[in-house]
Image (tube, rainbow over all chains, first blue to last red; front, side, top):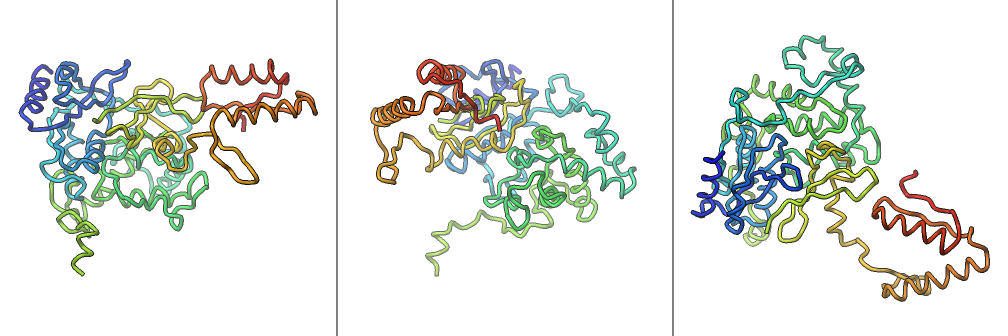
Length: 270
Length: 134
C-alpha cells in the first residue's frame, strides 16, 4: 500500500496525471475520491475499497466536460477491460486515462472486491428463479424450456430503476433504446417482459466486461451477470472475440476508428 | 474542482445513501452509496435521477402568487402575507377543520414537526397528512 501511495504522489507531482481517482474513507464510508496536486497530503489516506464504484465511468464523465485533463485510476482487472472498451468506442482517448493496476487475483492477500462475496439466495428464488452464483456450465445443464421460465421469473421482478444501465461503465449512449417508447412501454411496471432485458442483453454483446456492478446495483437480484456472460459467450464462440482484453474493434462495430467529427465542423464542408 | 459528495436521497422517507458526482459545483450524476446500511448500493428510479431535478430549469426557486389568473413570482414576504391573510379569513368563516396540512418526506424531521405544530397550535386542526401515504 505504501508503494501505491508513493506512485500516486509521483504521478501527481510529475504531472503525469492531473487527477487521480482512488478511494478514501469519508464519513465512515470508503468512497471514490479525487486526489490532485492541491491535496497531495491526502494521498496518505488512499485506500483499496471492497465496495466498487465505476471509476472509469466517473473519469469518462469528467473528460466529457474537461477533455484536456489526464486522469489516473486505481484499476482492478475489470477497470482495465472497461477502459479498453471505452477507448474502442471513442469515449476516452488513448492517453487521457492512466491506470495504476491493482492485482485482483483472489489468491493475493491485498485483494478487496465486493464481487468475491456471493449473494445469499433464498428458497423461492432457488425453486423458481436462477441462483446468482450459477456458473455458465451449471446454467446450461438446466433444460432450455425450464431456463426460459426461470429467466421470466427473474425479469418480472424488475422495478425498471435503470440502475443496471446507470452504473454500467460501458453504457454511454446519448439516446438509450431502453427509454425508447416504441421498444419499451413507458409507465408500465414491471417493464415489458422480456423485451426490456433482452434489448440490454443484446447491447452488451461485445461490450460487457463482466465487472458485475449491474448485478450489485439490482434491487431485485436479477442474475444480470450470468445473462451477459451467456451473451458474450456466444460472441466468443462465433467470432473469437474476447471483450475488453484487446483494443481491436468488436465484430458488430459500425463505428469508424476515430472520434466522431464535431457537428459544426462537418457542416462547414458542405 | 471535482469531488464526490455523500448525501441522503431527498425523495422519500426511506433515507437511501447517495453519492453525487460534482464537477465545478455542478452535479453531473448520482450513484448509490454502496456501503450505506439502508440501501446497500441499490436505488430506485427516482434516486438514480436526483441530479436531474437539482439542475432542472423547471425547478421552482421562489414563491409564486396567482394574480388575475396568472402566476407571478413574488417576494416571500408577500407570499406568506397573502397565505396568512387568506387562511385567517377561511378559519374565521368556516372553522379550523376547513384547513388541512400536507407534510412532506422531502423536508426534514424538524420542518415536519413545525408543520404539525402550525396545524394544531396555530390553525387548531388535526387535519395533518403526508404525501408518502399514497
